[in-house]
Amino acid sequence: MRYLRPMAGRRTEDRRLSFIEQARRDQLVETTIGLVAEHGYAAASLARIAQAAGITKGAVLYHFASKDAVVAAAHAHVLDALVADVGAAVDAAPPDQAPAAYTRRMVGYLTENPHHARMVIEAMTADGRPDAEARREPLAALLRRARGSRGLPPGPDPRTLALITGGAIDAIVTERLRDPGYDARTAAEALVTMLETALFA
Image (cartoon, rainbow, N blue to C red; front, side, top):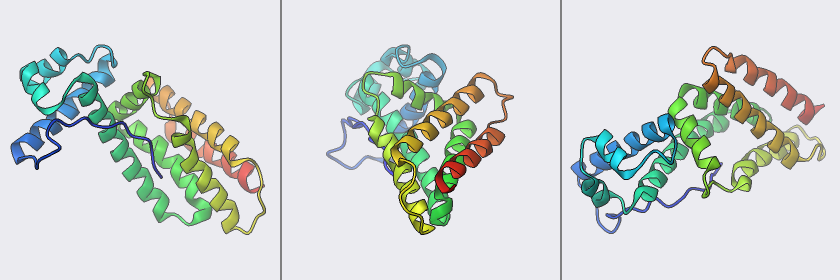
């Protein structure tokens, strides 16, 4: 399960970071996630990141080469956390239940972490958004393995099912962000039922 990640653009990657430098980088990444989630990519300027972190623009540039570099690091951080969480759920499930585990945890993680969900949405709508194939292919592979694990011949096109499922996950998460009272868990279960019906019927 892999996503295409932008380069973080570290200014200090040629040497080992001190504890204080790593803590400052982590603070800048978290600050940037919050700003992008609340105000969008365009409004997350270097000046605003520096102000929110309580440091100067020059101090931000000590750790990151540009605004794009700090935003890329923030996006990579979010994707690492998402992939680790969803990957753990998928790895713990039998192959025929892995697509359901993927669907439940994608919805679960992104609704439990709304700033991360907003960061992902912002990255998807920005010019350098992750490749659609990098988002779709991990689920398509799970779908192929799920059918194979039950001894079923090739069935519905996994690419199409992955596209439909991914679009539905995006819609559920977006609706939950718009309306915090929306029952995303029940929606995820309905999506799992539809997916398994299409996959195994």
